[in-house]
Amino acid sequence: MRKKGDNPFIYSDTNKRYHTYDYFLRQKFGKKVFKVPLDCGFTCPNIDGTKGVGGCTYCSARGSGDFAASASLPIRQQYDELRASLSKKWEDAFCIPYFQAHTNTYAPTKQLREKYYEALALPQAVGISISTRADCLSKATVELLHEINEKTFLTVELGLQSIHDVTAKRINRCHTYEDFLNGYRSLNGLNVCVHIINGLPGEDRGMMLETAKAVGSLSPHAVKIHLLHIIAQTAMAKQYAAGEFEAMTLDNYVDTVCAQLEYLPAKTVIARVTGDGAPDSLVAPLWSRKKFVVMNEIDKRLAALNSYQGKKLEETSCY
Ligand code: SF4
Image 1 (cartoon, rainbow, N blue to C red):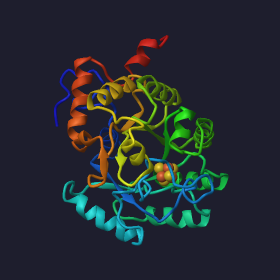
Image 2: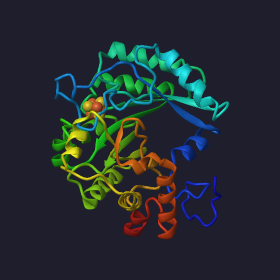
Image 3: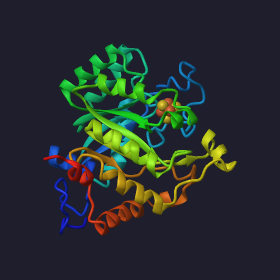
Image 4: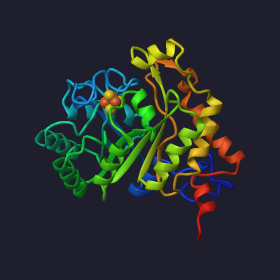
């Protein structure tokens, strides 16, 4: 890992000019922590007909849980198997069980409680991450999340993807930015990680920047910046094949992410600056397979511009 050198960004001890999740977790827990994705066999209101059918147009068959073990396995077995393989890389690390696939607050409270408490008891686990939609947070669920938060380091991950309702409609999200804001506010007092996606059909750089600015103004605990991965067998793959939109280039992506980072508060943890597309089913953009190249290009661009996370917020601050 490269040394900090002349990096002016305060939440970093390397060349990273943004507040990485790895840095945050090392500061908080004193050593390496990695997430272990789980699939509890939940579904999603955007798939089962409650809100929509077919899901978001980019959603894979496994509800964005492509790296989790099989949902047919008990949580403990899923956790042990994945942890064993990841521990080869990071011996003696702590773990955060990650309820990743589909919508992990979309079930009766009793069932959710059982699953969350099972995760609380997993060995070496120092937290829990729960991924969900902002329109799936009933009062009882929010109370349960507060209860879990009393017992561990909880992060609730909310998919926003874009603040633009025209985009949400086009990708069949079946909820609006207003719905997102209502759900976000209901989680007041909890750590929330907001997911956004760059490269969605019909969006230009200005729209993506507006999403980042709006998210930055909420000062969330964390943000995940994803690149749109076009996955085989999805509605979006068909639209892409029909020439309805183009995938982002690496240069555009790097430029957009660097600009977005300037509008995200320095304290907000950047849990991702690109995503992992399941390599076998990725249709485009194929350059995204080389995740470390993408991350290095972002580091290089930020350094070349002498930029860093939150820089534009400092410049506009009245202090
Ligand atoms: S909300 Fe998530 S799980 Fe549901 S359809 Fe969209 S991407 Fe898939």
